[in-house]
Image (cartoon, rainbow, N blue to C red):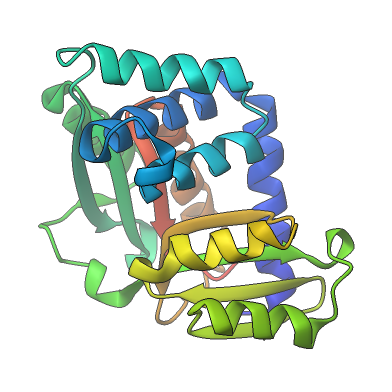
Length: 242
């Protein structure tokens, strides 16, 4: 898989999110609730909350919206008790799909996810059926157009902070970390004023599968579109070679 297509896809995702601020703000709002409940409302003592705040700002969420979300989560122990549930399954031609959700209604979420798979001619599998094909990693993407730093200097900052790998592609740099080192590396880059196009802990396929059949592509896209419409769905990962 070429690096160029990966960054083009990331930019496409950003454009979709920009057109659907309500959806992305809902997603980040739930992540704020979880981060506060797990580690407290002070970002200085809660690295997960710092990561979510950085993600919120990257998606142009207003500071007062972020602050309100933190205060609401800290002040009401009964508000929005979300649960993390991950679904795994197969799309057309055996494409592996992982769906991460945050939900306050497991039955609703399960029905939505199963419906999305079924309508795209796929099926939900058992836990672990496809996740072994992915590696959980911190992934940071830096757009070359937004970065004035030389590649070697950026690489040294990332590696010194604890990154596992650094790659230069056509129009972006990719930094890979162990999930436990992600916050440290992201903050090191942030302190250097480096703009990040994408920064998150993600699931990276070990190998990619190409889809050439037009019907299969349409079915897969239907599943992905339906999952995207659900407010409970936080992230969707596939091993499709785009």
